[in-house]
Image (cartoon, rainbow, N blue to C red; front, side, top):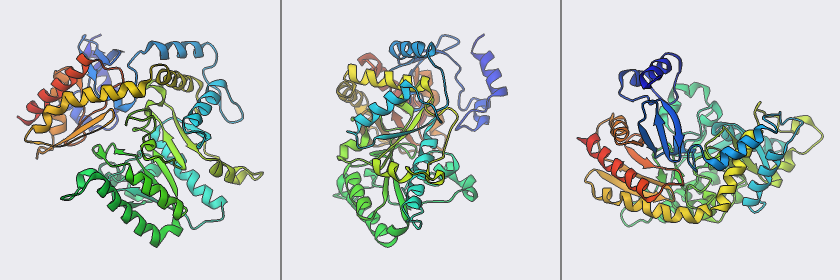
Length: 440
């Protein structure tokens, strides 16, 4: 069967995510059938290839069909594919929990598992809320999030999401959080540095906590980079100040590192660049190397201790059928092995420099604004009135054998950690060519 056969069958039977399906039917947003993947490349059924410049929605860290992750999964398949985690345990989940705790220096020593990022957000919010109930601080029921934040699309996660496109239709279902200013460095006024913007946003947070801190359970942030709002990047100073303010006003700090964790920003955890630890750390996407659905919330002894009791009602009774799935945990362990064995964080610093250099010429384009980079995330904004710009760019990039899917008028690259110099150069050429065609 070729591309057209699979396209017809998919359009008839599959409801694709984050998409107006009519755009697929008209070809305005091409639906691409993928037969296989190898390294950083995806191949369709007609033999055409595409360099995966966005890591298949920010998940794939070490390439498709990675032989080391494949070998680990094949071994695990012969041992245990799944067992419920309620009342049972197994080696992969124990070892993964221990290793993730060690990566936080033991500060976050308790791991609770689910299957996707939105579920991790829900778990962290519920844990924080329930913690304050167990602690006898029942008035602490409200949450804070940053302007432009995105933390998932389940109802609880939408409460702390500030992207109208995802939220407006479901507003009657949502118990909305309070939105506080974002430290987005693009908001710098004349003479301000990114750190100044961070301090200004932190001052607004402080004012809100002074007035309402007794009722706030937690502040949730995406550390350093807010993804779905258009790769808004900010200075680590905000995280330092937010951590201090949360301590002062007895408010939990939730770090959503679903997209920005696992080496994306230049350190394994993004919050490390501020020298802090959160009360809750949410991980997903890259944690399994992009292989299997897995998410985890790491938290402290203090939080865990508030639930440790004879009374069932004081326990955290949240559950998912595939919580801590052995195959997914084994993929995550293999992913962590690659980080350690290949010194990936150091290698990524060099790779990020080459990526930045490949895109640097576009900074001078008359319609390009705010060229920015944090580790292996590079983005720029395009000054265009065309509401269909993102789809035009996407089609033009596909024609140049590259998968690059802008967020509105923001073009970003978030490739796997395995690109060689030729592949980086290919991405740079494809982005430049797609930009010119999309603006023509």
